[in-house]
Image (tube, rainbow, N blue to C red; front, side, top):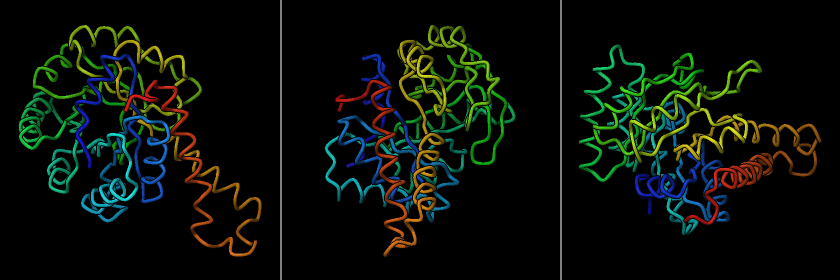
Length: 288
């Protein structure tokens, strides 16, 4: 059974650890994430962008797949299914499809007031259905689902205004970006993180673009109130490297090495191992 993400993230914030929110791209990804979480005894947030949902056939296909996988595998850890970087319209679709948590990314709206108004509306709708909701202040750098933004530092006063609407967790730009970090990246702004935390109190904060941030910065961010860390690129790189090695070794030409299950297995195994490594780094082992 899927749950919303509010309770597990409140516990993470109080316990000074973070939960990885890992993006799924297909069935193999989903099963790998569930296996990793069960072996690590860690709560799990599986998330999906609108683009990935479209690839899978739609939000309902994704939701039904994750629900069926949770039931079939018999995992004992709490699992939430979260919409990642949802537009205003995407949020309604994900709720209808059966997602247990949503993110409304209003950071790209024309005005902050529109972000406020739509966040307020969606908080009320989500909470009426027992669904948790994440909002965002300050665009996260890089490109996510075709929307490009420079890494911004969120305004602490705006963060407080969004927090006061009753969101369950808040994404705020602190110099983080999506995708692979460039060599000249300036790093996270811990001064800004501290200012934001002072305004929002014990509200769990979200770090987007978690792939490639040095471990010492990740751990410092967690100690300062980051409770959810989004991971997508990291697992994509691990998956692709493992499948590449399979072909490079010529295994696809050996016996029935062309069987897609054999081709995908190294990638799936790589996701399991890397996810468990990240869960350990974030401090969520044995927290289920």
